[in-house]
Image (cartoon, rainbow over all chains, first blue to last red; front, side):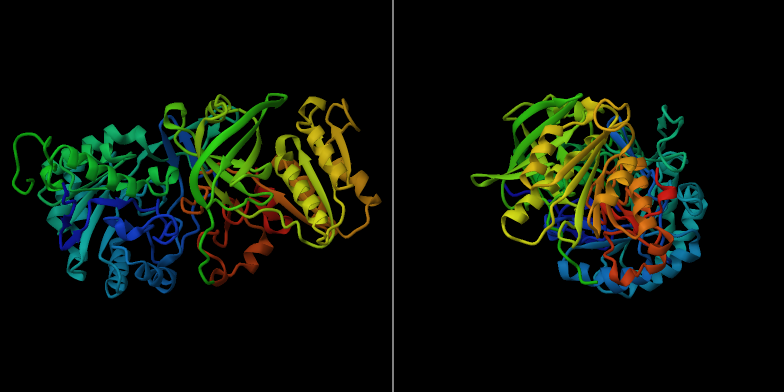
Length: 312
Length: 298
């Protein structure tokens, strides 16, 4: 049987619910020689900021049991180079592109969104409200519901494209953040970004990262992320995009079962560059085998009482 | 800069043999098939263990120590030390086991550079230099230009001169010279390879081109020696990595002041580094001495 994998995120219709997580798929073209990016639900690009950022000093990566810590620090080419160099290549690839944007203040996000909304080839925006690795404008700054709501209320009138808010998992209850985003006018929330974590080099008696802490991703966080996704999906009527430790189709289907409309694949891509495509194929096969005609029919089967409208 | 498509692919590699190689090291050979491109000396691959055998999440970056052709396959050799849980698990795999191999990655040694090649190895850092000696021998056999290489090989003791016989055989094949030293004096002069370089270099006909791999402290010594004398030197660096392809931005090395001043974003692919940091996986792992800030490298 053919399974309908298409999903809707606000004004955006995606051919399937599998997206690449920001920061794990470059600007969309780096893996294009081994991954058919048109076959992905969407490519979410590396977070772009107004000015280029050089990123944090080494170490930036530390592997831990079932996971990895990163302290990249939002290294990116900045708005101008993104516009002049990256967007033309993305347009040529024909992928559905969601641009991730990051700012230290609401005003920076207003400027970024204003500058990028007029560009062709961007289907939506994900606002990175949750980077754990920057000194200013990171997860801690944005994990304040009223600030999120006010900021999204300023961003909403600037674009008719999909506007997604990516949330931090470990500072404020995710339900509170998600509700604030919904009130502010977001089309969807992503639950969740990495968890703050730490690893120590006992030989040198110091952190294994250049900064004390980093963001933990990978299978180690999947149960935690799944619970945050479930919490967000019960709290809001807008779509929730599940993220955190998804390595294969079964992981993705767990997130959808607890209420996610779509999912993001991140760290898995560092192991298998085509991991997101493998998830799409595995999801289709799993649902077909179960006789489930559409991914919408799988969504929220474990959302639990009370059943909410908007979650079929 | 016009975008250049990366050449790497991820494919299945079948282990052909795996042997003890002395002092706790292993020699691993595996076959990969097209479209896997032929690695060059100094390049590396990322090995993913089969899920059932893997205690780790991320791929392991492994420097290539040899390449040969076997029917329609490419046979790639690795010399490594099982020091962590990932490489220990790899060491437990025998002939016939399959792993996933992503590569070839990074930029290797520019062996075609004019000058007399001096291959400088510290311990198991000899791996890519065995491959470099093979490549230099092949170039001479094919009648391409190329001077006879000299290899300087140092380690803490005689046992840790891993692959010494293989190194010797290769240098004989190319009619080059092999000089060894050990920290404890158990073979060759006592001292490290920097001291050996000071001793041997005056007797060599220049201009010299150094190609080195080993611990960063050794590479710093070689780089500073070369910079002080205007000798070109290429150093194979190491870093913790996640993706190995420039995407994750996880393996920065500090650029020198001169490299920072000369940095031109318009001519630098974004998979490479930025003005402050060079990515080890895409710009390296082989760097020219003057491009890195050796005081800030650990």
